[in-house]
Each structure stands twice: as C-alpha cells, then as structure tokens.
Image 1: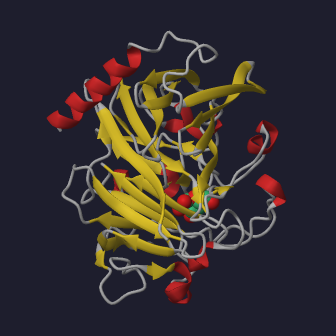
Image 2: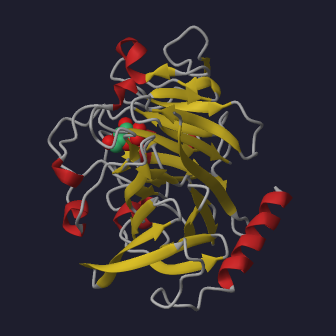
Length: 376
Ligand code: GLA
C-alpha cells in the first residue's frame, strides 16, 4: 500500500509541475501530443473532446462528459490503424440512452441488489435503474456528469486529468466524494487509468471504465476473440444478475479462461452470455495481470493489469443491433466486450466480500492499465 502511495505521489508531483502549460504550445516530445476540440455544452458547462496521441500512431479520444473514452486507434499486424472500442462521433449521441460505451462509471460500478445497503447501522436507498436494482451509479451516475479537465505532460507521457465532486446523497450515496481520474498514454502503447477519491463521510465506492473492445476494428463480433483471464474463481449471480455471495471455482466450467479460449467456444453453456465478476488470482491489494485478448486475424493484442481484486467480463449480450456507432457500424449482439476492473458486485450487501467502504481520511486508489500490441 505504501509503495502505491509513494508511486502516486511521484506521479502527481511529476504531472503538477507541468500542468500550467497550454495544449497549443506544448509538445513535450515530438511523439506525444494532446489535441482538444469543442464538443458542445451540457448543464451550461463546456464539453471537449481530447485526443492523446503517441509516436506509434496510437490515438485515444476522451471527452470530459462522463470521462468517456470515445475511440482508441491502434495498429494491426500490417500497420493499419482502426478504432478498437465502440462509441459515437458526437456528444448528442452520448446523451441518448446507451449501454455505458467507454464511460467512467461511479460512484458504484455494477449492481447493488434492490438498490439499498446499510452503513454504520443506517440504511441508504439508491436510485433504482435496473429492474429493482441500482446499476452503475444510478440514473445520473458519473458517466453523465461534466468533469473538470486539465491536460498534463511529462517527458514520456501525456495525460488528461478529470475531477468531479459528487455531492452528499447524490443518487442516494452518502458523503461528498471528490474523485480524480487520470488517463495517461505513453509510447509503450499503454493507456493507464489512475483513480483517486476522498470522502467527508463514510461511503461506498467502486469506480471503473466501461470500454467495449472489438479488436477487429468493428469488422465482426468478438466471438472469435481469444481471451485469457487470470482468475481461478467467480462470484455467481442470480436471475437478476445479483451476486449470491458464493465464490465458485472456474475449474471444469465455461468460465475457465486461465488458458486462452475464444469467447464463442463455450458461451452457449452460459445462460445469457458472459456477464460475471472474476476473482483475480493475484495477491490481494497488489497490482498485477488481469486479462489478455487476442484477435488472431488482425493480430491485435490487449493486455490488462490492475490493482483491483476483480474484473467484470461482459460479452456484450444486451447489444441488439439498435445502436449505430462510429463509421456507421451497427452494434449487434457480442459486438464489443468489456473488461471492467472492479470490486465485487453488491459488496455493500455481502460482508464476506472485500470492503468497498471509504472513510473520511482514507484515500481510494486504483490503477488499471490497458496495453495494446500485435502478435504476428
Ligand atoms: C455491465 C453489466 C451488464 C450490462 C452492461 C450495460 O457491464 O454487467 O449486465 O448492464 O453493463 O449494458
């Protein structure tokens, strides 16, 4: 923990020493840049689209509306660039209902059963937005808020730092929570996401990013993607997708991704498709490997690492061809897959799960990294 805090301090100091520079004048290195375009206004606040680019031609576009990652351009084995996440080209499309494409999700990612929980003897009732449950922070979660943004430059990375203060009882959650999320791009093709938060009253917190990956560049569904998840067990769910509190081994089941399997291979054995929290095998509280995804046709390869104890693997089961995104691509069932670093779903109601309570004076911290490459 101490090492993590020291690392975080170094990063904050490194970034804050460079924050005063304006994007027009700064190209810290020839290779790493940030551009910024006006995207409109929400709640009288300016919304921008920022594009972080590196020496290899990788480009990550992020808007301060919902901290949404709108596109990630990466190269395939023939050096051809394509967008590997689902999303839209305009702000107005993100304001319409959509299944959290690229969004920064909070205050509590994933489901809280019946939208209520007890903290220090008091019951809190959350905004209900998924059957009888609370999902992804409620009706107006962090994905629908305008974040304050600043561009940061260091010698070997560019970053977008976003801050949002969620007021006491927003969407039913106690405590004023100040969150800072920093998206960092470097020349190693790593998109690093640092999450920090502090509260003035005890609260619960579970932040994540909800990008839908399609390493084919949207050419076909993700059923042929080869997935490895470094997890020996999952938290099974009931019919309403609420965790039962049990922990089950993946051995001998369609959830065993400890060696690579395509998504399509065994999805027929999983009712509704994959939409489950995997308990990562790495030691509790450490930063380590989460998952790997390979599209053998394009050669695109994604590696994911995190400090979080779990990852929600969602195979885009609710996509149904009613949404058209970038380049006129129709998002059919399984067109994108999510790997959401997180604490276990419904932890506030599951005392046997690792705690998600954040108290005043404590610092919430998460680092999750998506690293892109190619395999010939
Ligand atoms: C998550 C959930 C899914 C679904 C999507 C959004 O990842 O686990 O069940 O709600 O978000 O459509």
